[in-house]
Image (cartoon, rainbow, N blue to C red; front, side):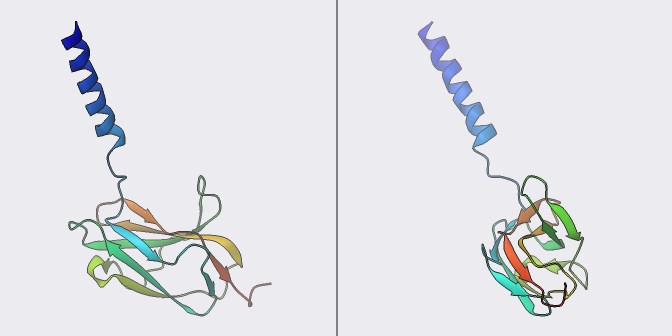
Length: 132
């Protein structure tokens, strides 16, 4: 009986580790910039930077601008990439922030990798003096 309990415990703990111990699926990158509470201005350049976390990651296919609550983000711009996917190995993308965006403190970038998974940035602020 003790051996049955021991085997059950081992199997159960292995299952828990398998299910909950896996790293979350991402685009194969970790976003370094923008950082939490960073402020950027409409019309300025934002240098988006990342670190490669998966050697199988090759491209970032889309970078979307979103806003709102993390449990229900709203899509603002589907894809800010102007010339198609970027190579992960570039480790940066320079984006000119549009001057027609609302000033908000809850913007997020969502980057979709060639593996179809997403990586999200921290919240950052866009101030746009041209929008009233």
